[in-house]
Image (tube, each protein chain N blue to C red):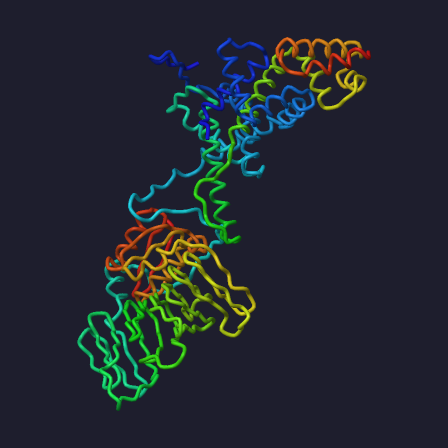
Length: 190
Length: 396
């Protein structure tokens, strides 16, 4: 990894290969995408914006040292989203005879905070061992124990074990959430 | 509004709070946030709940990241083959995204386009035709800057530079007032200022014909903008409304400043209000009246369509009277159209795509067609070829 350390102790890195680039892409795409969608309410344009930003990041990779990737990416997305809104607002205002505003008054900060939290929690889930993660995700999709067992070609007991371990994992990590309370309640029925 | 860095910091803290991995001081920070900010409080409470969190996790995972990654790699490949971005002019003109996609049109031509730009410019500068004033008896006066005296007892008409000034003559019982109609014709390339005896001022743009009574007698002050563009500053007089008739519409005015553009070879009648208030309606439809407020523009297309009102930036529209042509987002076709009001030429476009290519800029009329052509060339988006009085617009 191409790293440069600055006097303040902060680390700046460069994207030096496609694998590195892909890992950033995989990690941030969803949160950036949903952030944009929630602001501009247009999924096609939101996707286009995110893809463009990653393209530019790739193109500039030799020139740019990045300190905080999330900061860099959200800043780029926000900028383009606000531009889009300004554009759209001008069109709408003309047809609705409203007075033009120049600064979109959108509070995107809570949207950003949420997307980042979900991203991190998802990372947590990704850090689970493969099978356990698969079981957890299939439960998330609403499949039953039996369905999961057949889907993954494992025994129902194995499914149960994985489920238990997944919860334990989450409980250990998200101590202050209420996630486990309900699970604990269901457990008493089995 | 919070900065992005702050938001990211907050999300980290909230997550750590969720994990119960906060230092005492950070915990206090978060508790403060949760107390003071309702949105953050609600978010935190929601994300602690299984149902809510599950939904969010599902939502994020519903994206097929491998597919998106494929799309990204395609995008990267496509980009590698694109031409290098063209240079943009530092000066006035800039390129905005064209709205229509190209349909390539190749024009047939006979004469080779080998004239130079200077030859073209020399060809297209209009013959110095002067504005003409036509009085009712049919007499035509050329307004070439010299004092003109029109034989008339009730009114004094003076020409001063590029202004035509009407003033009531010294009153005399014997003077018969009449609303004799005068016509002012401003040719291509010209511009004239008309001062009427009621104090109203009208700036008349190129290729414009305007008819007006030499003095206002009746209840209404009525003038006719036969074809062209004019900017009006009308003296306020509640008892005598000022009315402008155009080919398609009628504008009624109460002490105000506005611009009307109604060229007979254009499809629209565009009235832009700067100050005061006007009422605008279709010529043949008394029900269609709309009132404009300052900063608004009314567009009449035809009697079957409602008058379209929108908010505009008025300065670019009236800048012509100060000698500037401002285009905020005009197609090349539009720009050359405007140029053709000042110069005598024909234009050919190599493609529809070029016709619709948009530019933004600011030019002085004084600097002439040379400046505009130079600026357009500097954008490196278009090139020109000349033959006689015809200019052909090509892409680079």
